[in-house]
Image (cartoon, rainbow, N blue to C red):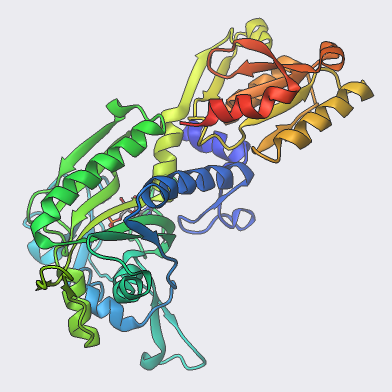
Length: 438
Ligand code: GAP
């Protein structure tokens, strides 16, 4: 983990927030490369969950919402209003009243001091700072979806079953935070809520579980590092009738990266009750009336990024490039799936003091950067430049040499096989489109 954290800072992926002030309680900033990886993860999720499912539509609800929503959802009462202690090792929280011993019942780790703890981040709306002005930063994006169920249903002429997907920031005043970006107080979630007939809920649960597992596999995650944990009754979230945690084998152990939940009719019936608006559904054909069940898939952008980053990280002992051959250093390669790689193509003129090579390289860069995130690098020996790109996971490097000027072609080097092939400049866009697609 130390090596991954250090690489992330050194190569502009992730910085501690407020770094020049000594950092700020488990907040992180995503640097020029980190922001690209995040964008790629979100795009891959949106494509698979929304674009490729005619029954799923998108939404972007506000972070600040009526505080009544959090009463209805149970976040202000049922969920987190007890005195809690948290295990410093496994981070499981326990209600003090339910503890029989002074150590963690799960892993025997040490426990924090008890706290009357609510995870919701409080703020004040308007000029007064009294009870009436209290609002909350959302603790999960899905509540914005539930309260828009009727708006979306009516405006989009949808029929059940259908889903609403959203990507956005969530905030939780976590008691303990550690393990880099694994558990933060401000993070992004990608959540999809699928509204269905209660009779079909089990079927849709299985369907979305498979879809989500395919997503990780298609993005190149080593499936030996992924497993499913069926959460037993009693340990589930307060809203869940069934819950599976998708677990990833991090350097610090197996931890949840995604939750898939059958939330039953908890959310819509609670919001019906608290808002006074009927959120039941009448089937247009059978005229049957019911409160839809919700199947939820919920994953953190940063947490899945950390899994992809750990999975991609490889150290190779000397010999991959000219530089390492001579020094026998350890070379770091991030073997990201090309879709996730922050830079897809590096454009490298062979020599920097040859204006004709620079001009040709700039032409190639300008052509490719319309389609792909590219990086232009003319500084240093070519082996060293390859190595810099390997370290940030760039799948393809292009070298422009003197032959390129005559033949209008370039050398393309593959990060993983290190094979090189000559490709005509006019064919490069199609060549990379083919390579970078699924
Ligand atoms: N709407 C359901 C829900 O929010 P959750 O299990 O509390 O369920 C879902 O959160 C996912 O959100 C987690 O699997 C994780 O990926 C991400 N997540 C939750 N809390 C987080 C935190 N403090 N820091 C980073 N990611 C977090």
